[in-house]
Length: 427
Image (cartoon, rainbow, N blue to C red; front, side):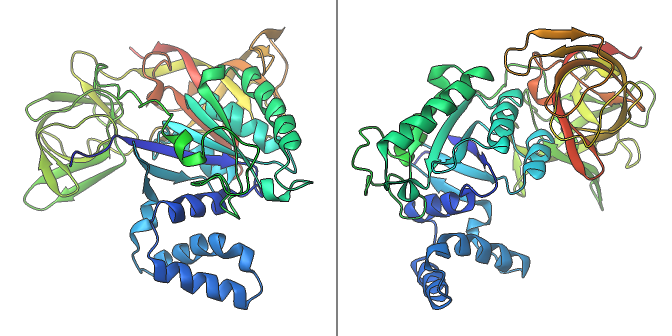
Protein backbone atom coordinates (compact mmCIF):
# COMPACT_ATOMS: atom_id res chain seq x y z
CA UNK A 1 0.00 0.00 0.00
CA UNK A 2 1.32 3.45 -0.89
CA UNK A 3 2.34 5.65 2.01
CA UNK A 4 -0.25 8.29 2.87
CA UNK A 5 0.83 11.91 2.50
CA UNK A 6 2.57 13.11 5.64
CA UNK A 7 1.79 16.23 7.65
CA UNK A 8 3.49 17.89 10.60
CA UNK A 9 0.87 19.08 13.05
CA UNK A 10 1.62 21.43 15.92
CA UNK A 11 -0.74 21.61 18.90
CA UNK A 12 -0.68 25.02 20.55
CA UNK A 13 -2.72 27.08 22.97
CA UNK A 14 -2.86 28.49 26.47
CA UNK A 15 -1.18 26.46 29.17
CA UNK A 16 -4.16 24.83 30.91
CA UNK A 17 -6.53 24.52 28.01
CA UNK A 18 -6.04 20.76 27.55
CA UNK A 19 -3.39 20.32 24.85
CA UNK A 20 -1.87 17.12 26.32
CA UNK A 21 -5.25 15.57 26.94
CA UNK A 22 -6.32 16.34 23.38
CA UNK A 23 -3.15 14.84 21.90
CA UNK A 24 -3.67 11.79 24.14
CA UNK A 25 -7.28 11.50 22.98
CA UNK A 26 -6.30 11.74 19.29
CA UNK A 27 -3.71 8.99 19.75
CA UNK A 28 -6.18 6.86 21.70
CA UNK A 29 -8.99 7.25 19.14
CA UNK A 30 -6.65 6.38 16.25
CA UNK A 31 -5.42 3.21 17.97
CA UNK A 32 -1.87 4.34 18.76
CA UNK A 33 -1.84 2.92 22.29
CA UNK A 34 -1.73 -0.78 23.06
CA UNK A 35 -4.97 -1.56 24.94
CA UNK A 36 -3.11 -2.95 27.97
CA UNK A 37 -1.30 0.37 28.49
CA UNK A 38 -4.59 2.25 28.38
CA UNK A 39 -6.10 -0.10 30.98
CA UNK A 40 -3.02 0.15 33.20
CA UNK A 41 -3.11 3.94 33.32
CA UNK A 42 -6.87 4.08 33.65
CA UNK A 43 -6.71 1.82 36.68
CA UNK A 44 -3.84 3.72 38.31
CA UNK A 45 -5.56 7.05 37.72
CA UNK A 46 -8.83 5.78 39.21
CA UNK A 47 -7.07 4.32 42.24
CA UNK A 48 -5.55 7.71 42.93
CA UNK A 49 -8.97 9.32 42.48
CA UNK A 50 -7.83 11.09 39.34
CA UNK A 51 -9.86 9.18 36.79
CA UNK A 52 -10.27 12.25 34.67
CA UNK A 53 -6.56 12.62 34.20
CA UNK A 54 -5.89 9.24 32.70
CA UNK A 55 -5.23 10.61 29.21
CA UNK A 56 -2.78 13.20 30.45
CA UNK A 57 -1.29 10.36 32.52
CA UNK A 58 -0.75 8.26 29.44
CA UNK A 59 1.17 11.13 27.91
CA UNK A 60 3.25 11.75 31.03
CA UNK A 61 3.75 8.04 31.59
CA UNK A 62 5.12 7.65 28.10
CA UNK A 63 7.40 10.59 28.71
CA UNK A 64 8.75 8.98 31.87
CA UNK A 65 9.19 5.63 30.19
CA UNK A 66 11.02 7.35 27.36
CA UNK A 67 13.30 9.04 29.87
CA UNK A 68 13.97 5.66 31.49
CA UNK A 69 14.91 4.35 28.09
CA UNK A 70 11.83 2.19 27.49
CA UNK A 71 11.05 2.82 23.87
CA UNK A 72 7.46 3.12 22.86
CA UNK A 73 6.71 3.95 19.27
CA UNK A 74 4.39 6.72 20.28
CA UNK A 75 7.46 8.72 21.22
CA UNK A 76 7.09 10.25 17.77
CA UNK A 77 3.37 10.70 18.33
CA UNK A 78 2.37 9.55 14.91
CA UNK A 79 -1.26 8.90 14.10
CA UNK A 80 -3.29 8.26 10.96
CA UNK A 81 -6.54 9.64 9.64
CA UNK A 82 -8.28 8.33 6.52
CA UNK A 83 -6.29 10.68 4.33
CA UNK A 84 -2.99 11.56 6.07
CA UNK A 85 -0.49 10.35 8.54
CA UNK A 86 0.38 13.04 11.05
CA UNK A 87 3.41 13.63 13.22
CA UNK A 88 2.42 15.67 16.26
CA UNK A 89 4.90 18.30 17.25
CA UNK A 90 4.16 18.70 20.90
CA UNK A 91 4.49 22.25 22.09
CA UNK A 92 4.75 21.93 25.85
CA UNK A 93 5.88 25.41 26.79
CA UNK A 94 5.23 28.53 24.83
CA UNK A 95 8.96 29.27 24.61
CA UNK A 96 9.98 25.77 23.54
CA UNK A 97 7.29 25.91 20.91
CA UNK A 98 8.63 29.14 19.46
CA UNK A 99 12.15 27.82 19.50
CA UNK A 100 11.24 24.47 17.93
CA UNK A 101 9.04 26.09 15.31
CA UNK A 102 11.85 28.33 14.22
CA UNK A 103 14.98 26.26 14.58
CA UNK A 104 13.62 23.86 12.02
CA UNK A 105 13.20 20.80 14.21
CA UNK A 106 9.71 21.12 12.95
CA UNK A 107 8.03 22.96 10.20
CA UNK A 108 4.36 22.68 10.91
CA UNK A 109 2.08 22.23 7.89
CA UNK A 110 -0.92 22.88 10.10
CA UNK A 111 -1.89 23.63 13.69
CA UNK A 112 -4.58 22.83 16.22
CA UNK A 113 -5.03 25.83 18.51
CA UNK A 114 -6.71 24.57 21.68
CA UNK A 115 -9.00 27.04 23.46
CA UNK A 116 -10.95 26.06 26.56
CA UNK A 117 -14.57 27.03 25.85
CA UNK A 118 -15.35 27.96 29.49
CA UNK A 119 -12.36 30.38 29.62
CA UNK A 120 -12.27 31.75 26.09
CA UNK A 121 -9.32 33.74 24.73
CA UNK A 122 -6.30 34.21 27.01
CA UNK A 123 -3.07 36.17 26.45
CA UNK A 124 -1.23 33.10 25.17
CA UNK A 125 -4.08 32.25 22.81
CA UNK A 126 -3.47 35.58 21.05
CA UNK A 127 0.29 35.16 20.99
CA UNK A 128 0.11 31.62 19.65
CA UNK A 129 -2.32 32.64 16.91
CA UNK A 130 -0.08 35.54 15.86
CA UNK A 131 3.02 33.37 16.02
CA UNK A 132 1.52 30.56 14.00
CA UNK A 133 0.69 33.16 11.37
CA UNK A 134 4.10 34.89 11.49
CA UNK A 135 5.90 31.54 11.36
CA UNK A 136 4.09 30.47 8.24
CA UNK A 137 1.51 27.96 9.51
CA UNK A 138 -1.00 28.27 6.69
CA UNK A 139 -4.00 26.38 8.08
CA UNK A 140 -5.41 26.00 11.53
CA UNK A 141 -8.14 24.21 13.46
CA UNK A 142 -9.43 26.09 16.48
CA UNK A 143 -10.50 23.30 18.84
CA UNK A 144 -12.94 24.69 21.41
CA UNK A 145 -12.17 22.23 24.16
CA UNK A 146 -13.77 21.40 27.54
CA UNK A 147 -17.26 21.67 26.04
CA UNK A 148 -18.38 19.21 28.76
CA UNK A 149 -17.48 21.93 31.25
CA UNK A 150 -19.53 24.83 29.86
CA UNK A 151 -22.67 25.98 31.71
CA UNK A 152 -24.85 24.16 30.71
CA UNK A 153 -22.66 21.32 29.42
CA UNK A 154 -22.15 21.29 25.63
CA UNK A 155 -23.59 24.80 25.33
CA UNK A 156 -24.10 25.82 21.72
CA UNK A 157 -24.40 29.45 22.84
CA UNK A 158 -20.99 29.38 24.56
CA UNK A 159 -19.43 27.68 21.53
CA UNK A 160 -20.78 30.38 19.21
CA UNK A 161 -19.61 33.17 21.50
CA UNK A 162 -16.01 31.92 21.76
CA UNK A 163 -16.01 31.00 18.07
CA UNK A 164 -16.97 34.58 17.19
CA UNK A 165 -14.15 35.98 19.38
CA UNK A 166 -11.64 33.55 17.85
CA UNK A 167 -12.85 34.36 14.34
CA UNK A 168 -12.13 38.07 14.96
CA UNK A 169 -8.70 37.21 16.34
CA UNK A 170 -7.86 34.97 13.36
CA UNK A 171 -8.89 37.72 10.94
CA UNK A 172 -6.92 40.36 12.84
CA UNK A 173 -3.65 38.45 12.46
CA UNK A 174 -4.31 37.81 8.76
CA UNK A 175 -5.91 34.37 8.45
CA UNK A 176 -8.55 34.09 5.74
CA UNK A 177 -11.85 32.38 6.54
CA UNK A 178 -11.04 29.26 4.52
CA UNK A 179 -7.72 28.80 6.41
CA UNK A 180 -9.50 28.27 9.74
CA UNK A 181 -11.93 25.62 11.00
CA UNK A 182 -13.76 25.87 14.34
CA UNK A 183 -14.56 22.54 16.01
CA UNK A 184 -16.18 21.95 19.44
CA UNK A 185 -14.65 19.03 21.38
CA UNK A 186 -14.20 17.52 24.77
CA UNK A 187 -10.80 15.86 24.92
CA UNK A 188 -11.76 14.49 28.32
CA UNK A 189 -15.03 12.73 27.35
CA UNK A 190 -13.97 12.21 23.72
CA UNK A 191 -17.05 14.05 22.40
CA UNK A 192 -16.63 15.04 18.74
CA UNK A 193 -13.04 13.81 18.49
CA UNK A 194 -13.87 10.63 16.58
CA UNK A 195 -17.60 10.28 17.24
CA UNK A 196 -20.16 12.98 17.93
CA UNK A 197 -20.87 11.74 21.49
CA UNK A 198 -22.75 14.32 23.54
CA UNK A 199 -22.23 17.16 21.07
CA UNK A 200 -25.88 16.99 19.96
CA UNK A 201 -26.11 20.54 18.57
CA UNK A 202 -23.10 20.18 16.27
CA UNK A 203 -23.81 19.46 12.61
CA UNK A 204 -20.25 19.85 11.33
CA UNK A 205 -17.31 17.41 11.15
CA UNK A 206 -15.57 15.67 14.05
CA UNK A 207 -12.02 16.71 14.88
CA UNK A 208 -10.56 13.73 13.00
CA UNK A 209 -12.68 14.53 9.94
CA UNK A 210 -11.64 18.18 10.07
CA UNK A 211 -7.97 17.12 10.03
CA UNK A 212 -8.67 15.52 6.65
CA UNK A 213 -9.92 18.89 5.37
CA UNK A 214 -6.37 20.22 5.54
CA UNK A 215 -4.74 20.79 2.18
CA UNK A 216 -1.53 18.94 1.57
CA UNK A 217 1.56 21.03 2.26
CA UNK A 218 3.61 21.97 -0.78
CA UNK A 219 7.17 20.70 -0.49
CA UNK A 220 9.34 23.47 -1.94
CA UNK A 221 11.32 21.27 -4.37
CA UNK A 222 11.37 23.93 -7.11
CA UNK A 223 13.50 26.30 -5.00
CA UNK A 224 17.30 26.15 -4.86
CA UNK A 225 18.75 23.67 -2.36
CA UNK A 226 19.02 24.96 1.21
CA UNK A 227 20.38 22.51 3.76
CA UNK A 228 21.12 23.88 7.27
CA UNK A 229 23.60 21.75 9.22
CA UNK A 230 22.58 20.39 12.62
CA UNK A 231 25.72 18.40 13.44
CA UNK A 232 29.00 17.38 11.83
CA UNK A 233 30.34 13.88 12.48
CA UNK A 234 33.66 12.30 11.59
CA UNK A 235 33.13 8.65 10.72
CA UNK A 236 36.13 6.36 10.40
CA UNK A 237 36.64 5.16 6.86
CA UNK A 238 34.10 7.64 5.47
CA UNK A 239 35.23 11.09 6.56
CA UNK A 240 33.21 14.20 7.35
CA UNK A 241 29.45 13.60 7.52
CA UNK A 242 27.23 16.64 8.07
CA UNK A 243 23.66 15.94 9.20
CA UNK A 244 20.59 18.13 8.81
CA UNK A 245 17.12 18.58 7.41
CA UNK A 246 16.64 19.69 3.83
CA UNK A 247 14.47 22.81 3.83
CA UNK A 248 14.16 23.54 0.10
CA UNK A 249 15.26 22.06 -3.21
CA UNK A 250 16.51 18.59 -4.09
CA UNK A 251 19.84 16.98 -3.23
CA UNK A 252 21.46 14.27 -5.37
CA UNK A 253 24.81 12.47 -5.39
CA UNK A 254 27.32 14.13 -7.72
CA UNK A 255 26.05 17.63 -6.90
CA UNK A 256 28.61 20.30 -6.05
CA UNK A 257 27.61 22.39 -3.04
CA UNK A 258 28.96 25.33 -1.08
CA UNK A 259 28.60 25.77 2.69
CA UNK A 260 28.20 29.31 4.03
CA UNK A 261 29.45 31.08 6.10
CA UNK A 262 31.80 28.14 7.04
CA UNK A 263 35.32 28.43 8.41
CA UNK A 264 36.75 28.91 4.90
CA UNK A 265 36.90 32.38 3.35
CA UNK A 266 34.25 32.52 0.62
CA UNK A 267 32.62 29.25 1.76
CA UNK A 268 33.55 25.55 1.85
CA UNK A 269 33.12 23.61 -1.39
CA UNK A 270 32.35 19.92 -1.60
CA UNK A 271 30.81 17.23 -3.76
CA UNK A 272 28.00 14.99 -2.55
CA UNK A 273 29.09 11.35 -2.70
CA UNK A 274 26.17 9.61 -0.99
CA UNK A 275 23.05 10.47 1.01
CA UNK A 276 21.68 8.44 3.90
CA UNK A 277 18.32 8.59 5.63
CA UNK A 278 17.34 6.21 8.44
CA UNK A 279 20.61 4.31 7.80
CA UNK A 280 19.71 3.60 4.18
CA UNK A 281 21.30 5.05 1.09
CA UNK A 282 18.87 7.15 -0.98
CA UNK A 283 19.06 8.42 -4.58
CA UNK A 284 17.79 11.90 -3.76
CA UNK A 285 16.64 13.92 -0.76
CA UNK A 286 13.77 16.41 -0.73
CA UNK A 287 12.45 19.03 1.73
CA UNK A 288 11.61 17.55 5.12
CA UNK A 289 14.18 14.75 4.82
CA UNK A 290 16.67 14.51 7.67
CA UNK A 291 19.84 13.25 6.03
CA UNK A 292 23.47 12.46 6.71
CA UNK A 293 25.68 13.12 3.71
CA UNK A 294 29.12 11.89 2.78
CA UNK A 295 30.91 14.83 1.14
CA UNK A 296 34.13 14.77 -0.81
CA UNK A 297 36.54 17.63 -0.23
CA UNK A 298 35.50 18.72 3.27
CA UNK A 299 37.49 18.59 6.48
CA UNK A 300 35.88 18.18 9.91
CA UNK A 301 36.75 21.77 10.85
CA UNK A 302 35.61 23.42 7.62
CA UNK A 303 31.95 23.52 8.61
CA UNK A 304 29.85 23.60 11.76
CA UNK A 305 26.27 23.64 13.03
CA UNK A 306 24.43 26.67 11.64
CA UNK A 307 26.19 26.66 8.27
CA UNK A 308 23.90 26.24 5.27
CA UNK A 309 24.68 24.33 2.05
CA UNK A 310 23.37 25.39 -1.35
CA UNK A 311 24.25 25.06 -5.04
CA UNK A 312 27.46 26.75 -6.16
CA UNK A 313 25.53 28.88 -8.69
CA UNK A 314 22.89 29.98 -6.14
CA UNK A 315 24.67 30.00 -2.79
CA UNK A 316 23.01 30.87 0.54
CA UNK A 317 23.14 34.61 1.36
CA UNK A 318 25.44 35.65 4.21
CA UNK A 319 24.02 38.81 5.77
CA UNK A 320 26.05 41.88 6.62
CA UNK A 321 22.76 43.27 7.98
CA UNK A 322 19.07 42.57 7.43
CA UNK A 323 15.69 44.25 7.85
CA UNK A 324 13.06 42.29 9.74
CA UNK A 325 9.49 42.47 10.90
CA UNK A 326 9.31 41.35 14.52
CA UNK A 327 6.77 40.88 17.29
CA UNK A 328 7.94 41.47 20.88
CA UNK A 329 6.44 38.59 22.87
CA UNK A 330 7.87 38.82 26.28
CA UNK A 331 10.48 41.41 27.22
CA UNK A 332 10.86 42.44 30.89
CA UNK A 333 11.69 46.07 30.05
CA UNK A 334 12.20 47.71 26.66
CA UNK A 335 14.24 47.08 23.51
CA UNK A 336 16.33 49.98 22.24
CA UNK A 337 18.96 50.40 19.51
CA UNK A 338 22.19 48.64 20.57
CA UNK A 339 20.42 45.68 22.22
CA UNK A 340 22.27 42.44 21.33
CA UNK A 341 20.33 39.23 22.14
CA UNK A 342 20.78 35.80 20.49
CA UNK A 343 18.90 35.11 17.24
CA UNK A 344 17.85 31.48 16.62
CA UNK A 345 17.18 30.77 12.95
CA UNK A 346 17.01 27.26 11.39
CA UNK A 347 20.03 25.67 13.19
CA UNK A 348 22.08 28.85 13.74
CA UNK A 349 22.39 30.76 17.00
CA UNK A 350 24.09 34.11 16.58
CA UNK A 351 24.17 37.25 18.73
CA UNK A 352 22.78 40.13 16.67
CA UNK A 353 22.52 43.85 17.38
CA UNK A 354 19.42 45.99 16.89
CA UNK A 355 20.92 48.74 14.75
CA UNK A 356 17.80 50.81 13.99
CA UNK A 357 14.20 50.74 15.16
CA UNK A 358 12.61 51.94 11.92
CA UNK A 359 8.83 51.64 12.36
CA UNK A 360 6.33 50.59 14.98
CA UNK A 361 3.35 48.74 13.48
CA UNK A 362 -0.16 48.00 14.60
CA UNK A 363 0.22 44.26 15.45
CA UNK A 364 -3.27 43.49 14.12
CA UNK A 365 -3.36 45.39 10.84
CA UNK A 366 0.33 45.83 10.06
CA UNK A 367 -0.21 49.60 9.47
CA UNK A 368 2.61 51.96 10.51
CA UNK A 369 1.88 53.59 13.90
CA UNK A 370 5.15 55.44 14.51
CA UNK A 371 8.35 56.22 12.57
CA UNK A 372 11.74 55.74 14.32
CA UNK A 373 10.36 54.80 17.75
CA UNK A 374 12.70 55.24 20.72
CA UNK A 375 11.96 51.81 22.16
CA UNK A 376 9.83 48.65 21.76
CA UNK A 377 8.00 46.77 24.51
CA UNK A 378 6.03 43.55 24.91
CA UNK A 379 3.13 43.43 22.45
CA UNK A 380 4.74 45.76 19.89
CA UNK A 381 5.22 44.81 16.25
CA UNK A 382 7.98 46.63 14.39
CA UNK A 383 10.31 46.91 11.41
CA UNK A 384 13.95 46.87 12.58
CA UNK A 385 17.45 46.73 11.12
CA UNK A 386 19.66 43.99 12.55
CA UNK A 387 23.41 43.39 12.32
CA UNK A 388 24.79 39.91 13.17
CA UNK A 389 27.96 39.99 15.32
CA UNK A 390 29.45 37.21 13.20
CA UNK A 391 28.67 35.91 9.70
CA UNK A 392 25.32 34.10 9.40
CA UNK A 393 23.05 33.04 6.56
CA UNK A 394 19.77 34.96 6.41
CA UNK A 395 17.38 34.84 3.46
CA UNK A 396 14.30 36.91 2.67
CA UNK A 397 11.26 35.12 4.07
CA UNK A 398 9.32 35.60 0.85
CA UNK A 399 12.05 33.77 -1.12
CA UNK A 400 13.10 31.08 1.40
CA UNK A 401 10.55 31.19 4.26
CA UNK A 402 12.33 28.38 6.11
CA UNK A 403 15.54 30.42 6.33
CA UNK A 404 13.93 33.80 6.84
CA UNK A 405 12.32 33.32 10.24
CA UNK A 406 13.87 33.52 13.67
CA UNK A 407 13.28 33.65 17.40
CA UNK A 408 15.07 36.18 19.59
CA UNK A 409 16.13 34.83 22.96
CA UNK A 410 17.59 36.50 26.01
CA UNK A 411 17.73 35.65 29.73
CA UNK A 412 16.56 32.10 29.04
CA UNK A 413 13.35 33.07 27.29
CA UNK A 414 11.98 33.93 23.88
CA UNK A 415 11.62 37.71 23.87
CA UNK A 416 10.54 38.16 20.24
CA UNK A 417 10.01 36.40 16.91
CA UNK A 418 10.13 37.62 13.37
CA UNK A 419 10.79 37.27 9.67
CA UNK A 420 13.45 38.77 7.42
CA UNK A 421 12.11 41.13 4.75
CA UNK A 422 15.38 42.34 3.19
CA UNK A 423 19.09 41.45 3.32
CA UNK A 424 22.27 43.41 2.73
CA UNK A 425 24.68 40.65 1.68
CA UNK A 426 28.35 40.52 2.70
CA UNK A 427 30.71 40.92 -0.22
